Image (cartoon, one colour):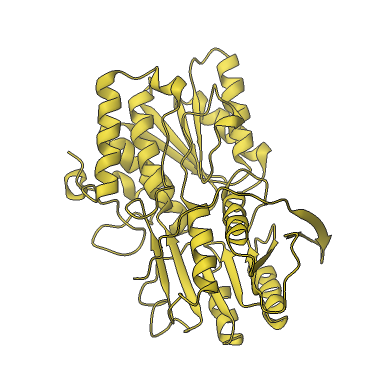
Length: 373
């Protein structure tokens, strides 16, 4: 497996956005030189959604800030295979060096594009290749990127189990596919690592962006007794945050939401328990820089998890720290340490003897088998 550890730069640059081809396309301000390494970045949300897409966009900014020979252009709100195929083919036809698809449900379009344009480097995240998608079935110019996002969800679940007053936590999930399902199941598994008998409920809301749907679902979950909701979705998390604020106002006591992908405490400091920070910015920057340096092998696989991606985390904010005893804080710190050292092995969604890519699989894992004591 190939992994490039590259330090993050803290410089950020400004971008402008224009509407083109009916899609929001974000152009980075520096014009590409004749010998620039040109990257097209495709994602399902927006560059400012404080979630999945924002994190990938930030990584592209950092790659450009660190290397003036890298030029990235991004296309937002691509959520169906036909659109991904159309845009990917357009960039490849224009001579782009790399097309990075940050959308785990687009595995088949990525394979099709790589076969159609063998001289262009395509990468897709997140995906952990199995027999059907790894060599020899994987095109040489296609790389898979797996960021073990669910490592952060596992940590968030452990923290939720320490904070909950009702003993009931929930998850409202975007769509059901293994790379997403593992996030909710990882959350449940992390909560079980602290309290094996914790109550868990979940629902797939089938949207990344509809705040009305997410808010209504969250209000129902809070009404059913859960006081913490994990939110592996995109900007629809804003509806869940609003539901948490309203539930508190209705006298339900402390209720919490855990946004995914991005540092999100600013969305509601009084209701955001933690953020499941998935390390996507680190992965985005690393993949783009690896491509520019010629460091992506044929049929490559860039694999990131909590042992090699320092950005993956679920921080304990100061107001949350005040709710926990010294023993509880020590318990959480010990779980974090064991995850980072590999003493606790968080299952993958599809590979290995234990997997959590199927709905409700997190509830049946033998805790001792993964290192939870």
